[in-house]
Every structure is written in C-alpha cells, then in structure tokens.
Length: 95
Length: 225
Image (cartoon, rainbow over all chains, first blue to last red; front, side):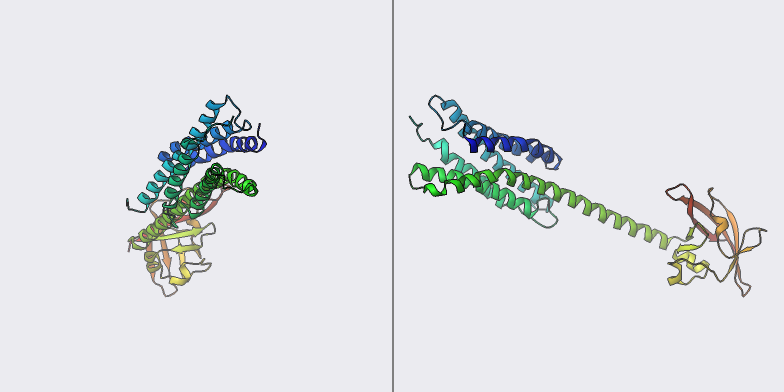
C-alpha cells in the first residue's frame, strides 16, 4: 500500500459524512446529486490508487481509478454549472 | 511491466477538471447571492489542486517533470479534501447568513407595518407598565390625553391629569386598567386641572412577563364625549 495514497483515501473517507450532512442542508437540491457523484467518484479513485505502484494484474483497479477520477471531475463540473444556475436565478437573470 | 499510458489516464481528467474549474469561476458571487466568494474560491482551489496533479502526471509521461516537485504535487492533491469541505461549509454559512438577513428584513417590515397601523388607527392606543404608567402612546392617544409627543415615547411617571374609574376616587395613573383579566368597555374619565374632562371607553389586554406575572397592558380607547 502507498502510505500517501492510503492516508489521502482515509482522510477523504473520514470527512465524507461531514460533506454529506452539510451538503444536504444546502438548499440547492439539484446540485447535491452531481456534487455527491463527483465527491464519491473521487474518493473511489483514491481507494483504487492506494495499492502501491499499480502492480501487474491490477488493470481493472487501474481502470476504475482513472475512470472514477474522470467521473469525479465531470460531477464537479456538473455541480458547478447547477450552482451557477442557482446563483443567476437568485439574481434575477438567466444569462 | 508498467501499464501503457492511456488517454483516459490523464487527458480526460484534465479536460473534466478544466471544465469544472471554468464552471466554478463563472459562478457569480455577490454579497446577497447564494454563493459567497469564499465558497467559490475554495471550490476553484480544490479543482486547481487536481489540475496540478493531472498536469504533473502528463509532464511525467513526457519525461519533463522534475522529481524535486513531486512532494509539492502530492501536497496539492491532498489539499483538495479540506478545500472541498471548506467550500461546502462556506456555501452553508452563506445560506444561514442570507436566511438571517431575510428574517431581520421581515421583522423590520412587520415592525414598520405595525407602527403604521398604530399611528393611523382612529382609536387611542397606549401601552401601560405594571404600575399603570404610560410607556407608549400612539398619535390618537397623544391627542386625546394631551400628551407631549416626546414624553409619550418614554415612561411617564406623572400625568398632568387625574383619572377616575367610576366612583373609585382619583388616580395619578392607569393602574386600575392593568390586571390579569382583560377589560372591555371600561368607562374612564380623565380630568385636567383646568376642569376640562374627557370620558373614554377603554378595552385592555394584559401581557405577561416570563415568570407569569402581569408586566403591563395594552389599552385602546375612544372618547365618548
């Protein structure tokens, strides 16, 4: 196991309940799901990165790690677009 | 044998996080809006941390990344976690702040509405302390009781008229109107030293202190002659 990657995964995992609880209290319901998808996907990518050095035979793990990393980025982008829409609507414009 | 470098591995994450960063940077952060500038920049910083990581990975594959920067990139990637948490918490704090501000505005508007109602009603309205002293009088009450406008907004301990309740003699205050039970249609006569008198028809509603004792009363009245 890679110590840094494992620590990063455990830190993200430990803070996940906090992020979920606070995130649910924010009244931007349409942004919550994409944000959660992005966050969980990134935590999954951390978990997949924890085994040291991508040993031979771990191609599936490697794929899961990178695919979830991409999904994490897209989830964050989706959430940011929804939050932007909320912000524009609250300011009385949809431009 | 190391696995081959794939497009999925680094280029797609760069594109995804670049898209996320652009989307975050385009979120308008205004003083009274739902997104604070703190939340916006925490989210932007968190995404930037990952752009640094994925960018460094591409440079590594191109063999142009100096090893000395490796710990720096790892630190950047680790910062994503607190930055995301701070961003979410900042959003939540802004929501709480906006709700507090909205409540305060609603309270002020309600207060102004009540003040307008009090000042425009054709009946005199006074607020009495538990001792029967006037602590507030509206415009009509000030006219009917000939109260000074400035004095009427502060506690009046002595009046320049006496108050009669039926045959109970004279009083220097309205203490007879303050009780646990509300009054309806109570006849009260106020008399000035000059001999001028005014008869009032009074309704009252007591209000209680936290310990349950009578803290005062609101009295509304009209002149009957």
